Image (tube, rainbow, N blue to C red):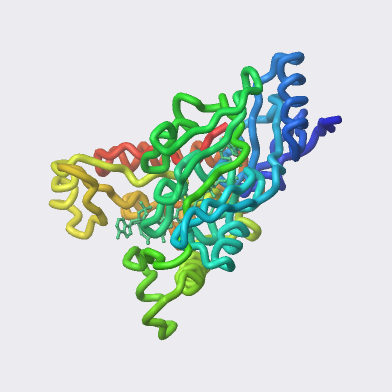
Length: 339
Ligand code: FAD
Ligand code: NAP
């Protein structure tokens, strides 16, 4: 029988926002989910799935049925001498799963080491870091339809993965409970991606010239630990905004005034601007208003110094959006899911 709790969500979101939930239940089996769907229907409530709470900003109390995803289990089958198909239940911790794959010498997700949260959220925004996105190794997702409990399987084209995007964040938002995700990984001849960001520099400084997937994972972890605030110490949800993709004509007009603008080619006639550079150049890095702030080392990360409310963080984010727009003519979009 599903236990419904009334509790503060402070420990359930990495921003550490103190809102109340009136109906929180842990789901560990398909039966738990079906029972939750019955309660939802009987009480005519909305439903919200909570993974690690590392990509969420709560701005209000939650009266919806809040399901804490605790679905566990990892299985695999070898497709060939070269490839393995690994299926992980949605409630598995993402970083622990990455380490499990590395221990088995299964390659493809080592660049995604140390991303907080659960496996179930990995397709939500097509998680990405250091030149690798989940879509690069994705096979399929199994999900339950909230409306009628039916099970569906989605392949990569159906998920419509984009930059920090998928159908689960757009047209199918809130309509499916992701149960498990399958990834196709390599067993040998791993395709290492070490050219992005500071990975090759980090490997060089460690004296490693012929890296393994373990070496790449270790390098990524070292870089992340040196730059990103640990949510256990300082509340945050990683990058608050996406890197905006703009027309090259806008980039050139920005470059006239700011020759050091950080930009990368993004398809025909477009470029991806580093949102962190825009926010920092607009003067927000290290800014603090009450307990809501902009991280001192990485301007893309908004932080909670202790008792900030979700509304305060949201207002700070809106002031940044407005200021960046007035200074550069660029509209920043939030990456974090605002509730
Ligand atoms: P949650 O925050 O719990 O949920 C996020 C959204 O997904 C919510 O809308 C929720 O309802 C929905 N959801 C979650 N699970 C399910 C499910 N099973 N079924 C249906 N809906 C579901 N992200 C990156 O892409 N790359 C990074 O490098 C990165 N670095 C980060 C670093 C830090 C320090 C932090 C705090 C965050 C970072 N993030 C990064 C963001 C975040 O960790 C990822 O987006 C992660 O996948 C979120 O997982 P979660 O389980 O915490 O999701
Ligand atoms: P960084 O290496 O300082 O780079 C700054 C920005 O430039 C990043 O946003 C990255 O875009 C882009 N970039 C760097 N090298 C690039 C290249 N060769 N080609 C195209 N774009 C390039 O960034 P960081 O803040 O330390 O983060 C490192 C990685 O971890 C990034 O991939 C970042 O996305 C990821 N990360 C994500 C979150 C999150 O919450 N989403 C939080 C922390 C870190 P991309 O962001 O598009 O990669």
